[in-house]
Length: 108
Length: 127
Image 1 (cartoon, each protein chain N blue to C red):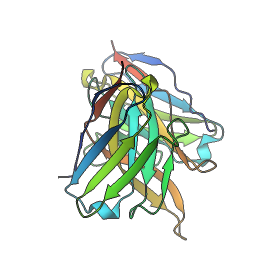
Image 2: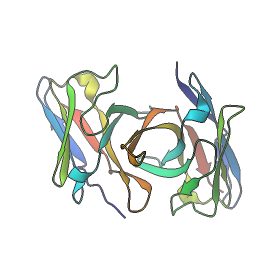
Image 3: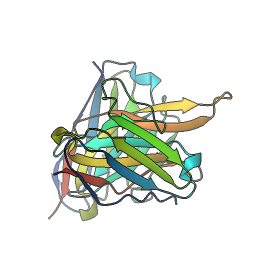
Image 4: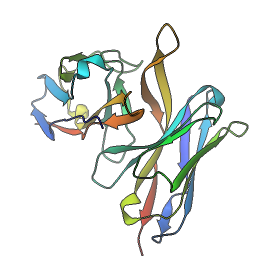
């Protein structure tokens, strides 16, 4: 089955740029989606189809995908961005949804 | 507004059954594929099951295949998950989620994602 690998944690100072990676075999050929989950809350979609933003998501959130790595970039990080972030793809070979293990973003 | 509200969670003994429900509102329920996703305490997200618009197709994660059954009632805008032979490792918050998708020129599925999610319902399997 397809595996997505995320770093367990990323730390960044307020106002700086956070980059959260999601690794997978030839992930650049797939569409990657990203979710934000704050403590005791349901996940919220922040980026879909590699780089599109749902309505209501700040422009500070952006995504890219190439080769074996997809990246969620959060510019001008705020304290309120502190959360767990998950990447997700659809694995066509198994017809199953696959999530990455999640990355905890800490705002210093 | 689009809303998904889960119910039915609770504490259940190993080997017993539980049925979860998800009430949908604010959109045409029968127009969307629906999923269940779970999250064990302190762990990541795990996809559980999917059901097609009209219930004609259903797929399951290997970890629940043969024990869980997903269903829907489009007349009542309700999604369900029947969980049998429950195990301690099934302990988790269970979320229902609406699928959004992109398709190619020939209608083939290119990608799918979840938006929105319900607030979740906690299932605890313990003796």
